[in-house]
Length: 375
Image 1 (cartoon, helix red, strand yellow):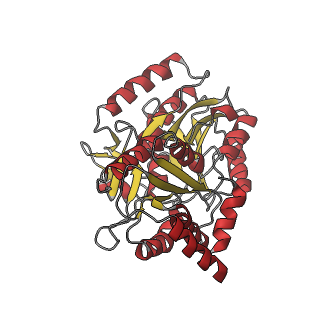
Image 2 (cartoon, one colour):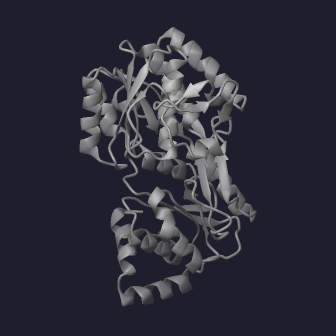
Image 3 (tube, one colour):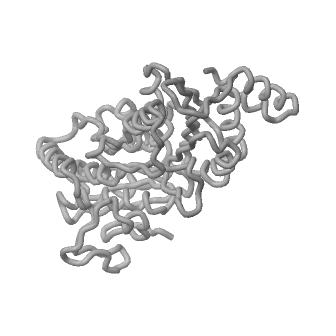
C-alpha cells in the first residue's frame, strides 16, 4: 500500500463526504465479527519502517505475516501520537475490514487506542507496552512486550571484553523502568567480565531527537567511552556517530550491523515475528486472544544480533555460555549484594530478581557504577 493511498485514507475522516465514503466502504467490505481463517491485520508505526530501530523491528514482524494464506496486512508509518492515530485505526477498520490492530507506539494507548476500543467493541486491539490493566481497561484491548534486559546484559558481556578504557556509554531517551533496566543490565553484564567497568548515561529527553543523540554520543566518546549502546527509537544516529569516532557499538531494537560492520559487536533485538504469528494463529482459529502477553529470549520474543568480527574468542565463549543459561529460564540480572549509584541497597546477599518480576517493571534506580542520574 502506497503512502499516497494511506494518506488519503486518513484524510477521508476529516470531511462529511468521508463519512459517506466510509458508509459505502463498510457496505461493500463488511467486517467479519466472527474470527475466521481469513482476516485483515493492521499495523501502525510512529516513524518510518526502515529506521533501523523500534519501527523497523515491528515492520519486520508484520512482514513475516504477509505470506500466510488468508491474512491481509495493512500498514501505515509516520503516524503521530495524536488524534491522527485514531483516524488511521478507524480507516483500517472501515475501509480495510481490519479485525485486529497493532498500534505499536507507546503514546498510542491512552486515549487513542482506548477510544477506538470503545467505538469498535468487536475489533481486537493489542498495544506494545505494559499499560493494559484488566481492572480498568476493555477486554478487546491488551498488551504485549518482551523481556529484553537479558539481551542488554549479553551486550554488556561483549562490551566488557572489548573495552580498553573500562568506560562504556549509554544514550537513553527517558528514565522509565524499561530504560533503567536496560542501562543496569548493560553495565552488570560488563561487570561480570570486569567489576571495575563503569557506564556513563546521557538522557536526551525524547524517543527520537537525532541532534541530541549525536551530541550525546560525541560527549560520551569525548569522556573516554569506547563501547556505546542506546535506548532510543532509532539507534541509527548513535551507531553511525560512535563508529565514526572509532568506538564500538552494541545495538538495540533491530540489527544495525550494516551501518557499522567493523564496529558492531552484537545487539539486543526484538523478534516480533514470533509474537505476531501467535496472535494471528489465534485469530484465524477463532481462539480468544490473550490480553497480556510476555516473553524473553527463551520464549523467542527476543534475539541477539550475530557477533561481529571484532568480538574476541573469550567474549564469544562467555556470551555463548551466558546465553545458554538464559535459555534455560530463570536467569537473574539483578542479584545481591547490589547497591544503587546513590548508595541504597537494592538487593541483599542471596536476593535475585528475574526480569518477569514486578520489582523490575517498577525499577526506579540506576545501579552502582552507572554515572548519571534518573532526575
